[in-house]
Structure formats: C-alpha cells, structure tokens
Amino acid sequence: MWATNLVSLVLLTTAASAATSTSKDKVLSNHATILADSTANLAFSVYQSMVKDKNVENIIISPVVVASSLGLVALGGKASTASQVKTILNVAKVKDEHLHPSLAELLIELSDPKTRNITWKISNRLYGPSSVTFVEDFVKSSKKHYNCEHSKINFRDKKNAVNSINEWAAKSTDGKLPEVTKNVEKTDGAMIISAMFFKCHWDEQFHHKMVDNRGFMVSRSYTVSVQMMHRTGSLFGFYDDKDNKLSILSMPLSHKKSTVVFIMPYHVEPLDRLEKMLTKKQVDKWIGLLQETAIAVSLPKVSMEVSHDLQKHLQELGLTEAVDKSKADFSNISGKKDLYLSSVFHASALEWDTDGNEIDTSIFGTDKLKNPKLFYADHPFIFLVKDQKTSSILFIGRMVRPKGEKMRDEL
Image 1 (cartoon, rainbow, N blue to C red):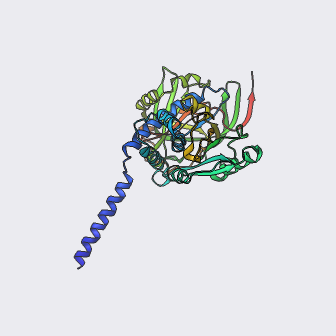
Image 2: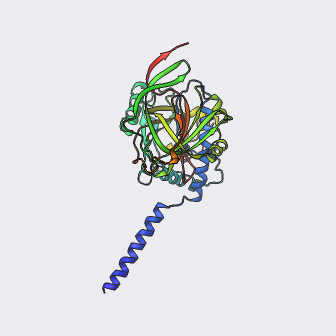
Image 3: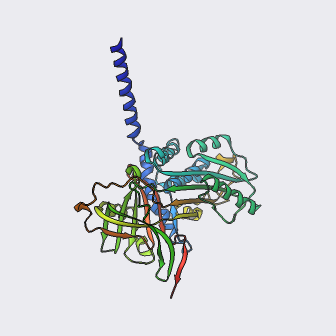
C-alpha cells in the first residue's frame, strides 16, 4: 500500500513540476507572436509621427497598449472602421476571432507581475456621451479582452467631465497620474483612455546612498536640478557608435525578462538627428552590436507623467474613418451609427528609482571591472523597454525635460 501511495505521490509531484515548467516556459500562440512583431513596428510608426509635433517634449508610449486601444476600435467598429485597424497593425490575415484574444494574450504575458517582478498597472476606459446606449455584447467582450470599463459622461459640462476623467486616472494609478487632460474639445464623440503606471525594478539595484542633486541639461542654455542615482561595479550591454556620436546602453530589469535600452548622443543636442535614424531595423542592429562592458551609470531619479492624445497620430497612420463623424460605424458599440472617435488618450506615469535586486559583488575587484566606461544621462535621451522573450517593446519614449527647478538660463 505504501509503495502505491509513494508512486502516486511521485506522479503527482512530477505532474505539478511539469505544469509549473510549462507555465514558466509558456509559448505564445502564433497569432500573439505575429502581433508582438506588429506592435514593435507600431512603436516606431507612432513615435515618428509624434516627434513631428514641436510642442511635444517628453514622450512615453506603450505600443502594446496602443494596439489594445486599436483592438477596442476594431471590436466596436464595422466594415472599414474596423478593417483599418488591421491595416495599421499590418495583420490583415489575422481573423477577428483571433485578433482580440491574441492582443489580450500578449498584454497579459508582458505585464504579468509574478513572472516579471514589475509594477505595471494598466486601466482602460471608454467614455461615451450621455445619449449613448452600450450594447451588452460589446461591454462583455471589451471587458473580457481589454479589461475596459465603460462610462457615459456629459462632455458638454466640460469642467465636470475633465474632473471626472482625471479623478478616474488618478484613482486607477494610485495617485501616480493626476492628470490626463485639461480640456474636452469635442463633446459628441467617444473617448478611449489608457492610464498606466510603470516602475522599473532593476536586476541590480542602484546604490541607495549614492543619490545627489545634479544638473540635467535640457539644452546648452537651460539646466534643471534633478536627483541623479549612481551605480558602479556592473557589467552591461554597451555599444559606442563613434560614427554617429552616440552611446547605447542596455540594462536588465528584474528577472531579466526585459531590458531598458538607452540611446544617448555624446553631447547636449536636440534629438532630431537621432530620431531620423530611429527605425526598428536600426535599433535591432545597435542591440546586436552590444558587448558586455564595465559601466559606471548615472540616471535621473525622477518620475515622468505624460499624456498624449493619439487621435491625430493614429489618423496619420490610416485610422481615418473611426475619427470621421460622417463615416464612422461603431454600431457594435451602440447599435447604431451615432458615435465616432473624438480622442484616444494615452497617459503614463513612469518612475525611475533605485529599487532592484541585490548587487552581485562576486565580480568586485576582478579584471572585468577595470577601466569602466561612464554613461552619464544628464542630457536628453531616447529609451525603450524591450521584452526579451517576445521582442515586443513595452515602452518607447524620450526624456527631454525632467521635472526640476531651473538652475540657470543663459544665452
């Protein structure tokens, strides 16, 4: 009897172990893999559209979340209002019944706090005017695939509408994102809002005691005071692009499931020159040239709160019908053609802090750390948070003007 029980126990243990192994090494479906590649391309398309706007300084975009907002458009739209989404994502061959579950699968994979040890809180809401009636099937499907909430709001009462939107975003991000918008321009359309809070947990923490106030040079004539955090005695992926006079640094986040890639010019300059080079192909080339190098790193210890209305940028990429009051067909949302997409707010709070795993001291005092290179991020840079497993881009952005008091303003 005891032998039978022992065999059963071994089988159960083996099965549990196999299940755990399977869950840890879960492979994305073919459709989710296609969408992972699609969202990586979308990252650069949206970014390049945004940098044309000279009024935009800091940028933070999560292309996977943008794709989810587009998925919501496809779910609620009919005919070309929906099919334009697939064109933008370059997934025309992916059927509707696969599109929404696969987008959901990809985002769940990338934002899993347990396997990745990340803080990434994402909330989505669709606001409709007071007159709209939401179709129950759409409400259920959008909640299932995109975890999207729904609200009717009187956009004509602009002050209360703005307050309601901002209060929801602040509550959804535990107060990290206090403002999405200052105004509601159009009062008769539907509004999609994504509110996010992302905090980097480094694979090796920064030195908690090595934080000091320094100057971040927004331009050659304008400097702000920010806290800088420092880390020495570490090996990172690094490439010195002497031809283009820029440095690329890759720093792993906790569990090494994803990395932050920094692209920074040697000296203080507008980022236009770098941004003209910024394509998926070029970034992949730079990443392929990274070599393990001893680096002394200094990064701003700040939070960035940025809100973008992506409507015009998505329109530029081909989302023309959904935003056109006379052409939009969102009858899957309301049962009739009484809606169009007036805004797509993409709001993020991203926190750069010292938190991370304990530093590996085993290489201290070894030849590996001799003559470290300095990566001092005290002037504008571009960054990406890149997933190692799927090659998706969790975030792409730039830091041009961190929060801080002006130190000097000279001619």
